[in-house]
Length: 237
Image (cartoon, rainbow, N blue to C red; front, side, top):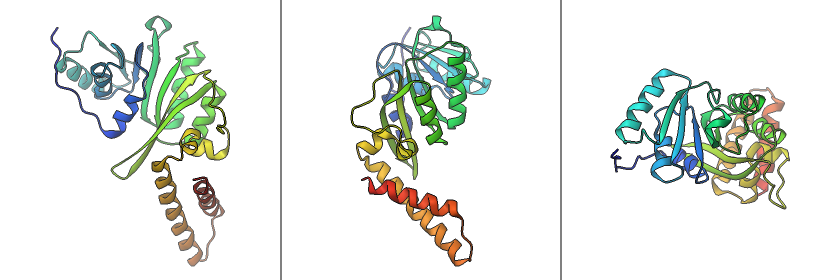
């Protein structure tokens, strides 16, 4: 088989997600969509075996076209699957990539896998919502965030993380505060500049909302609380 030597190009967000994958082993690409993350992982020697999955036939058909165009059929297997439902221990999956979904849906996917005894040692995750509850969920199920990144792409902020099963926490880092859950323990510990920009932007936004409400003669305690929480988080820098 002749492989297409042209390298696939990913967005900054998806490239950052893919780079979090530890080299070696078999990777499950959950919600693979167009299949480009799977192709990137093989081309950049992160793995030589990917199981690319999507719940819908349309994305899988597109992924199949792209995998064949790059000549990587021997390395990337396509499966129609709701989350990790079609993955078993026999597949030898060592890492799973789940990006661009809501935190609650990611919780469901991971919880269902654990519920049937499938323990994947490494998850690469880029949740779009419910980050605080999602980070708590990971801790409660014995996953430790071992690496975090944050990307700003086209004005949108994307936090992402590597979570490893029963991995040791880094000494001296607070993993369980409200701030750590909301914004990421490692991002805060390293004083990540992208996170700081995000906090500053959100603080201004909520200050403006609160001011408009005050001028209108109404007060929403939740808005004031959010604003104060963001300010206290910014002080950590």
